[in-house]
Amino acid sequence: MTTDTTPYAIELRDISKRFGAVQANKDICLQVPAGTVHGIIGENGAGKSTLMSIIYGFYEADTGYIEVDGKRIDIHNSQDAINAGIGMVHQHFMLVENFSVLENVILGAEGGALLKEGVETARVELQRLAQEYSLDIDVDAIVEDLPVGLQQRVEILKALYRGARILILDEPTGVLTPQEADHLFRILDALKEQGVTVLLITHKLREILASTDNVSVMRQGQMVAHRETAKTSKEELAELMVGKKVRLTVDKDEATPSDVFLSAKNISQYDKQGVKRLKNINLELRAGEIVGIAGVSGNGQSELLNVLSGIEPMTEGELHVAGQVITAKAPKDAAQMRGLKMAHVPEDRHKMGLVTGFEAYEAAVLGYHNSSDYNGKVLMNRKVMIDECNQRMADWDVRPPNPHLKTANFSGGNQQKIVIAREVEQNPDILLIGQPTRGVDIGAIENIHEQIVKLRDSGKAILLVSVELDEIMALSDRIIVMFDGAVVGELDAKDADERTLGLMMANAFNKEEQENQKGESA
Image 1 (cartoon, rainbow, N blue to C red):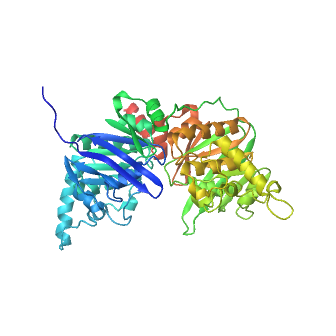
Image 2: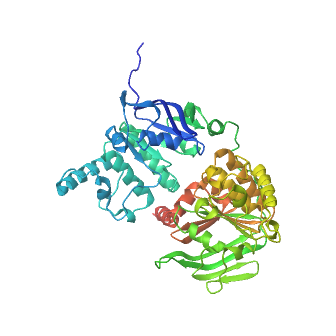
Image 3: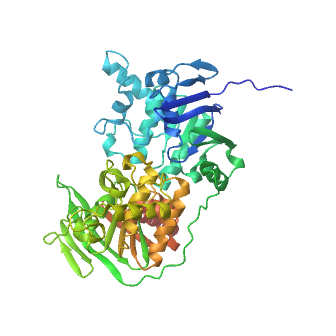
């Protein structure tokens, strides 16, 4: 009988990290075999990011230590991590947009005083790495001209060029189409074949099951479970993350849409630099219907929400709401749109949805604070506001249920619940909702989805923007796809599938149809 004594690619021993009163990581142990893809999952605030930051040298652990290939190492900064063969691809890319691929990769690792010689050496090495790991890319292309999926490849090449044999990927598919995500997973397979070890941080259980060999679950700063991916399930992983059983499907009946509550006709918008961000948008929102907007982030969804809600003016076109016609020459601001029974959950809760220095009961009335419900003859009626906030916190499971706590002191998911509850409880006819479950724990997603469906069933019109394609497909009755500021497709949700939507999101659907037709005619 033989014993495999091959050391782990990376091993964490009793890692702990505290920030003041918050124990972010506690006695974390982790063993990752070389040449595997290891998933790390957990709810928002479970300690995943802190742990990865310790591995990559952004933070130093208070206690515990790290071994790489069986040898204990000290990581005080990112250069120590790089020297140990650890690379990291961040969720938000660290690229200089007007530099070429080659320039981005060698930035900070130019190879000596003779830049020209270093560049040519790097070019040869990059071409070798691109071929070896299926990372085909033009090394002379300017980064800002590349689609997001190729920009991500540049980040991976940067890490490999610096000698990474352990690669950390933080939420790598958040900005990718399904097709780009599938290609990323093929790249991970190629990395595995060459002996590279991957730590994959994601909240998408489907991707964990599809792309990892093993998965570890974190909850409240601790490592609570390790599983062989082939021997677990979405349901088990969700329960381990939350600590209780979680329903992962959205229950809803077929929609019965009726009256048109909002009609947008040829709406366009130019930004301050004269760039056309919205291009002749036409859409209708009907009572009793959820319309989902699918698209890779940055393709006009944010601008559309801002124009429809009155935050930004349109440049061209007409918007018909509640018998009113709104144009560039006759605009309405956000307060006036709320007066037309339109509510808006903004995509960025910190920038547009909250004042983090306010107490929760104050944040719970923002935008509606002039209502007679909250005002006496002279002063605002704090008791009414606090009582109402207490009730909403109970209904929406906001934790801790303290209306006097500063909004900044709630977790991201609980901040989101405060914003959504504020808008939904106003009983609007039209709800514009952007990224409803961004940063929300998996256990709370179920409640938010139920509330959105309940609002639809009560006869409201809902426009949903989300980068989570699963969420769009699960909640929507009708799906509109945006690309580069324009609507490029529309279909009933029951006819939608991930492949079709992914092609539309890349504006490649008609091109593929044409290619298929050519193949059939040949």
